[in-house]
Image (cartoon, rainbow, N blue to C red; front, side):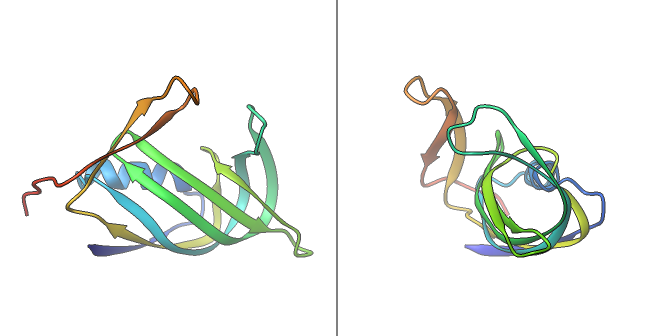
Length: 136
């Protein structure tokens, strides 16, 4: 395992930025180790709710976790508003950085993550293949 650290800038979309990073670097699998930052807007799917919810900021990121595959990420986020109320859910496109998002990823070179539709859940679920040959 190796790590990759990055800082997203104001206006960046977290999900899109991480997806693009994985594709641009041709990484087979990664996961989020750490994230600290602030959002101007959060877009998430709440548990048991099929649609998206938009929350306007400023919002402090208190947690970001999940897996990244070439077919897309599966990320969950929790954030706090100006009075400390915390809300979280499945991160969607539209989580926009206000000031910064400092993210540390674990790169998993011996594993390949992919996503395949799962009839039981109705979602594209994680498929793990190991070991994998990765060229330096």
